[in-house]
Length: 114
Image 1 (cartoon, rainbow, N blue to C red):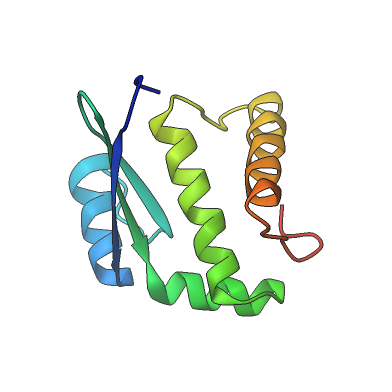
Image 2: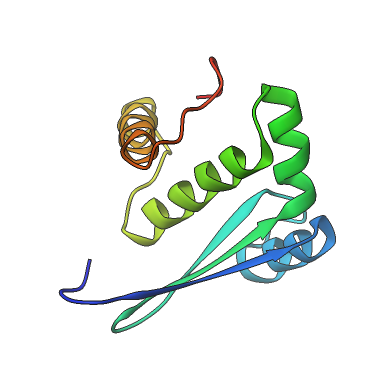
């Protein structure tokens, strides 16, 4: 992270915009729940989050939408900070950091969410 204050923009949108952004910027023509776009300088970047995906995933995992939104925000932020989950070891570490960050904020995921 940059030293001092930094900014992060979060856009709540819908499935169709996430699909379009995913197609246009990642060459994946599929809907997703969160996308991260790297910033520069003191702006860490932008997150685009599908609110319908937040609601669906929260219901599927048995917690409130705000908990799912917090999870996706942390997940996207970790990507902006250089973390990835391409391998099993990376997934475990990213999950560990995500759970710790959420716990520090008082957010508890439903059992089995990650």
